Length: 342
Image (cartoon, rainbow, N blue to C red; front, side, top):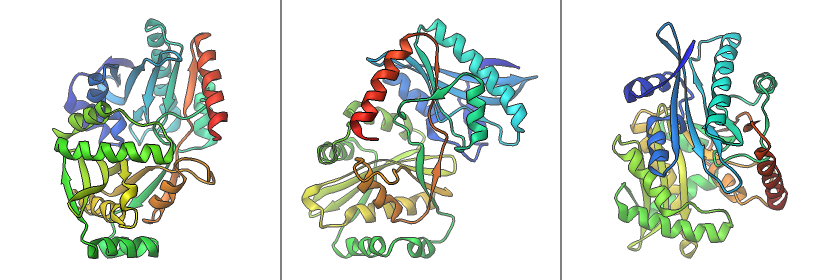
């Protein structure tokens, strides 16, 4: 087996799409997005006798607490491989990451695996010297999933009664949903996003960050902004990424001035319908929290779960220390976790 950097977009995308767990965080365009924001990236492929067995997008993150290599929801392996063979591939990738990390002079390697949270999977990382990260990265480990292969009536019946009623009420109230990637709708989203951040007290994304994400995915028609219009104003907004067999509810925001108008419910239901139209099988509501009433995502989690579905838990983010620089990151992130209460 050998590891080679992949430069062919078609080859990369074709492989990632073979996996039912294909995530936009390992897509070609997510790599382009990170390059455009100034990060250094590597698209690595594991080959054996010319056959591609696994891919892994690696991002060098330059943070104040120290630089590190990050693998978001990867690596992606052929699903049919048996565990022992998979471990050989992962071992090869881990060794490569260690060497790359030393060359890049980073303190550690961080992987958010797209693997089920199980002792068997955790053991793979333990054997390679990884340990649980003090906190998770920006990408969720506990997600809410909705099967959208069902028909529209079945999806409505699976929703919480209040969600179903509020979705219908938004229609009666005259809420109109607009789908677009035009910058004026992005600006409207960001205005509401800024307000939402202040209300729920979480760390905001920069405008240029979200704009670069839109630019990276819109050329392949893999992203849309859903804007809920009421009384001539956009009062709630959602950004949805389409990738593989899934649609991802990646960003959302709502105006407190119009909280009595249930526009967010209709907005998300229209996004679900659009995902069905595009042939997607799963609507991924992205991150939720469980049994943490003080967490900033607590109310949002209740909102997402009201649409029906089930939760999926991925293996916790894993860190591999390369030198003593990691100790500073571990200390800072542990303190941050205690301070935030989660």
